[in-house]
Length: 349
Ligand code: ADP
Image (tube, rainbow, N blue to C red; front, side):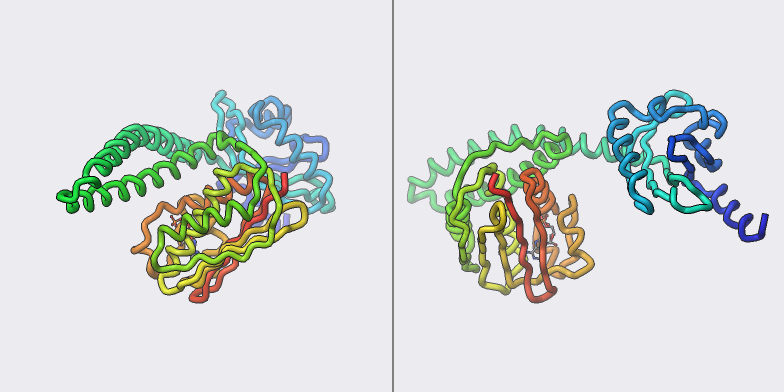
């Protein structure tokens, strides 16, 4: 073996990530020592095992589909997370990256790179569970708090002698609403994570909904003018409540992140097989390096005036999930210091 070969062999054999080579028929040709460390099987044992013996039954169909897709496409790489059975019977979560190098004469194999991510998955699971339990537990006392605050508001608002108390009760109501919004966002996140974000679709005019929301949101701001430039006079079949949620989120972000800008414009257009809606602001904008991440859970860009904007970084994540569930697309164009335009499409049905 040449110096170069030994060099690469040493690298592969001492890598903590496992590397396995599998042929077109699914037989294991090579497995690096880390494979045994992770899965407990020796290479000889691994060579006798069928994928269906060790891949979790819930993950197997998708794994087989991915594998057949991979085999058809030379040089393609696919990254997956799935459960695999350790020799001692435990289920492990692994993250794998597989590349089709069947056309490479030296290898003639599918290359699997994988690592154990069980611990990371458990932490993620506990975090999701905590979000779900905490948001459900917070919801009940909050609903009752809102009920009493509203009752109190009704009582003191009628009495001219209690204007000071009325002022404070109004503040309590506003803060309870803010708290409710945060808890509702957390509840939506746990619904998304457990696949329970159900859509209640109905036919409605998108421009009608935009007009309604623009007027409601105008009531909430004394600093901005919400304009509309609408050209989608057609009905779509979608979840009106959830689409409203997306619009409200985009417009409130547009206001929140444009302390100096006065205008927010909502556009609509008839797109092929649906509608396209955009919300434009002339605010602080988003740096290029943050653009790809703003739709991620809990992501908040390091916008300079960040501290004055309370939020959990969930609004855009939830909006993106809602649009995805409608088979639409959501994206952002932005320039730092100039402004941002968030757009989405919704198919007609
Ligand atoms: P939140 O506003 O609660 O932080 P979002 O998910 O709505 O969460 O937004 C994520 C991040 O994207 C924000 O923290 C902000 O940095 C950035 N962002 C969203 N909308 C805009 C906008 N219109 N202009 C500038 N930055 C924005």
